[in-house]
Image (cartoon, rainbow, N blue to C red; front, side, top):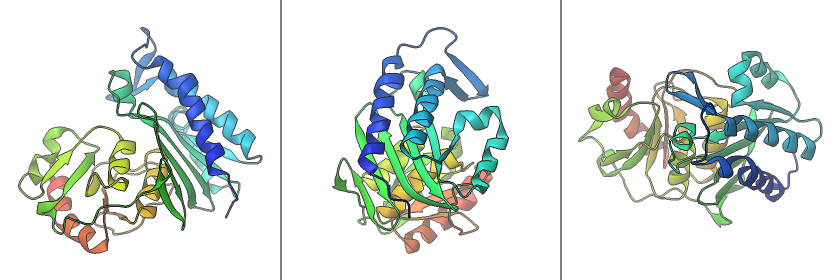
Amino acid sequence: MIDIDVEKVADILREVAASEVMPRFKNLADGEVREKNPGDFVTIADEASEKALSAALMAYLPGSIVVGEEAVSKDETVLERFKSENPIWVIDPIDGTYNFAHGRSHFGILVALVQNGVTQYGWVYDAPQERMAIAIKGKGATINGKPARVRQSAQTPAEMTGMGGGGQAWHFESINGHIKGLINVRSSLHDFLSLAAGDADFVVHINKVTPWDHSATVLLAEEAGGYVRLAHENIPFAPDMLRHCMLIAAPDEARWKMLEEVLYPRLVKAA
């Protein structure tokens, strides 16, 4: 495992958020927001954040390379870097760009360090609230320095409140009455941070998994004690995955299976 000073990397995220992201929040000029695809926004802050993070992280770890969301959106061959044996920084320069562009505070920065197909470290930074979660493979996770643990109180889906992403509100209507509740804030970062902080019982993303949305967040959930798999296939997420599927994170395997039985057939049909 690569030896990393996780606090130094956390400071890089904080510094980039302070210099490139937060000054532009609620302060974007005309022409500084555009749609890559319908509903998929990018701003000048995303691009500046990814550039700054890439430079700082590669300087911190010589020989490392970067797979960033915005770089991939311009050139999908960037994904070929996952074949390298070099350490790979996986960057989401602003997770929750839709929220950021619309003046909503559910956004932040996601960074993971991957080598040989394994996510070894993850940083999940809620920039507006200055909450920093750090996950280390096999060594647990913290939020602002305190241990992160998924909550264990709810025993059945009917008792569980979850975080949902990857769809519109009507996609989730089919599960009304089968779970206690579902919150959709349009941010993978906030979904998994809520799970790891014990503020939600599960996460379901119904349409897509990506390296930048899920490498750091899935590691956070797992190191906080959770169980994360692709629904129907029951296989672990891998950091080079970019595919349409459903992902469920739960407190443990038994409750994951219960959630899959409730969520998968209904949400697949709705999507």
